[in-house]
Length: 286
Image (cartoon, rainbow, N blue to C red; front, side, top):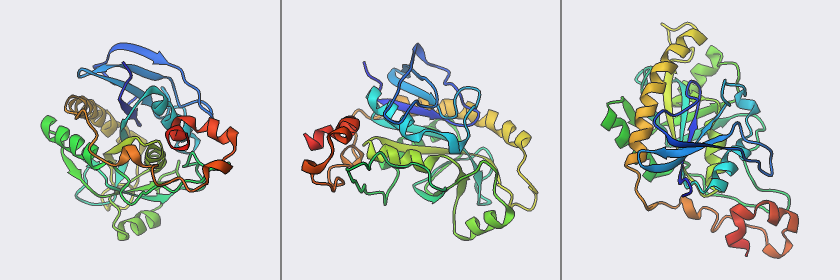
């Protein structure tokens, strides 16, 4: 049985307790190797695949991640839904450490990261006005409530380049824009998942108030690690509950995201590009 659910573990979450029948799967892609091997097995009666975003031992910085390989690997395994876990800083007083935010929007402040599978003779413009799967978001929200985790659904995740944290000037500008949380990884994942026609949701686990808060003069790694440990424990409970209540059918548009996105005349798409993107566009190009 192929895994239909993918889990991406962020900072402080390098494995998922509760798996049975573990199998490590080493994959390659047209864009190189993913962050780590995928761990495939069963969780809450469902077949799932887990990937450590930064590699076990946290070896890769946000700017070094091979986002295309990571998402392509899930697609090649047969994954249709991805739950992404990510440590974030809070840009609003009400989003206190240990709260889980399920954002429905992203704002990009990265610089030149690869965030599309397309090019090389094949152009695609996906719809990204609503970048998060609404069905999957609601499943995760209900799971948070079920296990007693403080959660809010909705809000904007600002994706910065890093690896340094924000200056106070930057943090206050982002707050003036109405951003909710700040992280370094999820925008690229969301875009690529949409291109791969995979449902995607972020569980943004708040670890700190960034550096804007008057009582938090600066972000320290020690403070963040303390909250990371508590968030990781809660995240495992939320993921297991989400997987257990996952609907069989996808009642969303994610699975047909490329249906009206491919602009290039199929007759002029280079054969090498067709072959490279066969997994993603084969059903549309024939």
